[in-house]
Length: 633
Image (tube, rainbow, N blue to C red; front, side, top):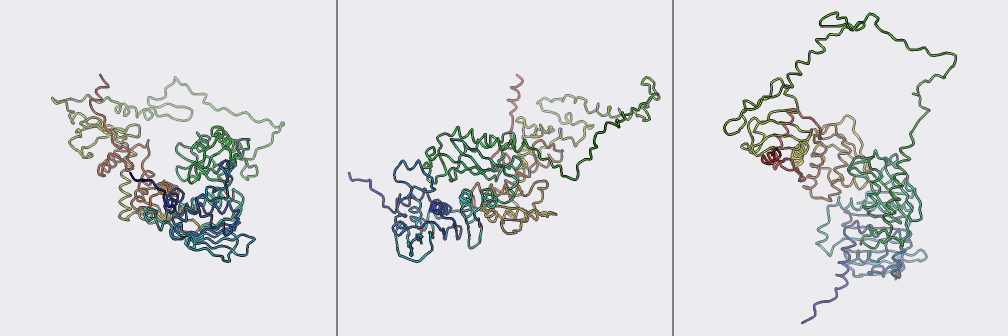
């Protein structure tokens, strides 16, 4: 039997390894910028073309590399950070495994220009697909200049699965923001297609946060700071009233490294329990410093998941520190004694005693003396008793018990005996009649059935198989979704102009996503105009969403699109229509008139598959007649 196991060529092995580290253009920028920070760079410039698909350039003024180091840096597992396995538990640098440059060079064309500060000449190195094409001495500035072109040029399948430019640019901006937030002592700039998106000078931490996400956060952040032997925690959390369903800026950093940690996230949200509505989120920027020996950052290729030795203890410290910050915020009322509207409080004087209040009464009043059969006098006022109790007769008629229905030989209700009392107001939301035309299968609807609204949530009606329940909120979501989806497809959304346009300020990552869905927003009825710098004027909103906050609605649609990561036009249209429908649908507890319920159910059964919402939630449920009968056995 011949041998079948063999070693992979280095080029193939590098491409396989690159799949774990380099997933998209944002991964390249993350690795190159982190290497620049490890090289003590104080100014880092990032330039991308076509969201990094065509080219990525990262320029820094760090230490630079010698000719030998420049060549070795592209070899797998070549690193200056560790010498032995024990060094893995004393790491304070961003990169350490020596895989980044090797992985990038395996799937792209890379040009490196680098020079040490004490050297007169630097080194220029060209590598494509892990193969060194040239190496020469050149004159260049101090530091390193990496140029990465044609990402995944030798792996067409990987390049085909890259998203649209807007989505990839949004991912680049997200990675860039994470790095910029944890290094306020480094100046950053980011250009996309020669357009400046970020220019962040060296600044204090809070100013860096405001520079990235907007000055609106300035009045929303509360400082947290705690120092223990186990962990040092610093940063900011947002006030409870700033909570939102989507789009909260939530960041954890440990020892200068961004991380995702659902367990610690739960600790922060636990501190906000009963302070914010269920399901809403708040922003936070929390920086932890722990002994590197007590964490393991080597459990994930991208190093965004970190294992802590004392997770439970840190959880308690983190939760307590957030509660302390919220307690200080809530316990100190703001009183301004300099306001001009303060009431004029007279000073106390012992000489002038206040006058007691005077009591006025009618000395001639006698409750046992009747002045008239239909009226009485009280003081100087005349009470008309007949008018006062005149409504009792009408109320008594409304409480008359409905007569029992008659049954024919086949135990079917006779419609003539089930009509609603004419004294009952037809506009009452509790009891109305329903016609069989409301249902797709007319043969399943009993004639003359009653139509009720239960608990302000469900619409009940009798059918031949039993009792049908319709969720009014979900039914309206289904109706609105089909309407908005049709408007998106036909681009016939009706826009209603606003009297005073509001300005929507977005971070760079959200602004990039907004540009990608701008056409769909216009199609559904939004009228937005760019003011530059991530600012947009909301000049018009879709007709029919009056009473909703258009700013929150746009942000919700933006973050839904960002979370789903969809760049297919059909998918984005689905997300927009669904988000808009859920925001504009009637709420639970809203009483509906006869006309409103009739219109709602008519439109529901005119929809395709009325039984489920667009995201798969049940709208209609039926309780079988035999199940109801079992309750009375």
